[in-house]
View 1 (cartoon, helix red, strand yellow):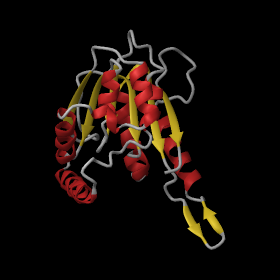
View 2: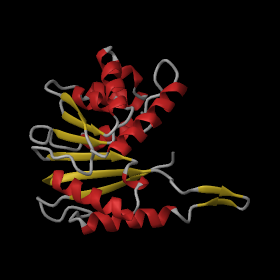
View 3: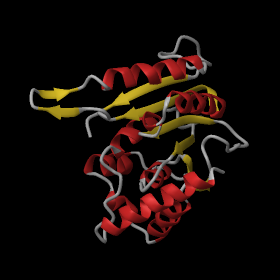
Length: 220
């Protein structure tokens, strides 16, 4: 465990929580995205999902309501405890966006679960592989070395034939007097693509057992 990293993110979340409204301000803007990706899986045999760096999101519980077995790993013990406390209060799906609530209700299925793991994504060892890894805005924050290491870790965690979905936003997009400057956005996407391909991922499935990476980009 990177203790300095854990302390940094605990402090970061503590500051965020001090600004939140009583009802949460959950990271749910793109919650329908992860649900849509997960529901592409063959639920009869592909049920295991990993959410690295989940943060302050209740999406794992929406996925569990759809019958998936979900594991969350985050370096911040504080945020995991807050998520667990909020989930224990019940009726958590009311915090989702309307599209996500609709998806969850229409695909409701028993047998789902959520496991919260306090750990470092760069060093943690799981005793199983996953059918889907869905990561939201973690890899994009790292330098090239960190992205390469993370891609290798995700490749080791992913089941052959599985999908790794990486979501990014317009990080590096900035407004100037002449308009919007997106010159830093495309290089970031190319850098991420190179890291994941070098780790052994494919973009687009050619063979049934390929480990596929898919990059999802949105404004935010």
